[in-house]
Image (cartoon, rainbow, N blue to C red; front, top):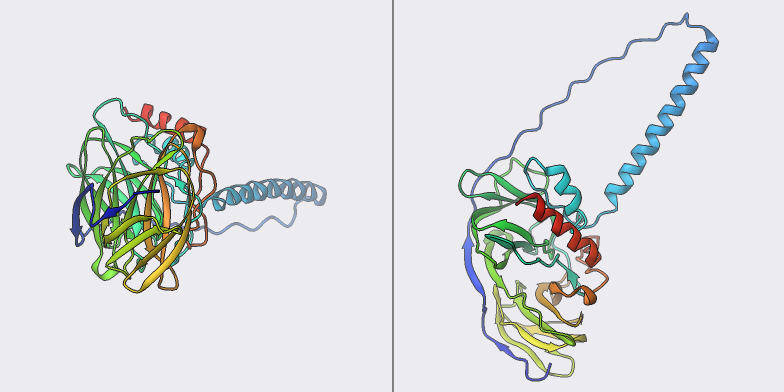
Length: 360
């Protein structure tokens, strides 16, 4: 990382919003229950035994199937995006390979391991762009995220129970303006904790984050540069979202500066460094922290500076773009009781290709 220094505030920051837009969701209809009739006491004993045996076998089979389904659902660890089109079921199954349901409540520590891969976007084929969403508010509990078209209010996709420190995969979207809303998880009728307009530009990738304390929540959009740096190199930037420090400095354990004076709510410029494992020291406003990151060759990453559970600072790396041969493995512990899933590159690209074919 020789000579790599980023000073001051963000390059690529597009817009910042505060406040919320009220909204409601559909009500869930109540279910009626009915009483069962008593069985006839005059049934033949042998027939009754045969019937009970068949019923027991059927119940066992149904119980086994129910347990299997339950186990499958509980094995996921990140939020699942849902496209609200006529193809919802197909897309939901595909998107599950990219991101799964999260567990836990904020505030929590976000501790870094190897960079988690946030489904790298493929090249667009028409008037599309890419968008992903991050939850960077330490005292805001899990939220459900909804993206709707500004004109007509049609839902485009949803994310369930996104928790502190999590960043969604990229979603390919037609160019235009959308409304991004975040509500308390599992409360579709509640007023959004925040709502903002976001713009998708042709061929561009953007990261929209909600950051700050819950009583002063803000959103901002960063333009992502996904041009890969080549073998043996890694490209990175830093997003300062820690509420305990107005500005932070980040350097390697050897003393090489990565960022100086990075202001709250901003992103630094991208810098190209040698790929490999690095130990980073983070400091600001009397707070400090240390994080280990593993930057694979020919990748682009964003390092999110966040609060940890002790009131200090930590760094969570997220891979923005990666070559097939150098996608990092492992996950990032979000502090919410689970690790962000890191799917294989082949599964990610296959799912993205199918999603694109469905929504052309």
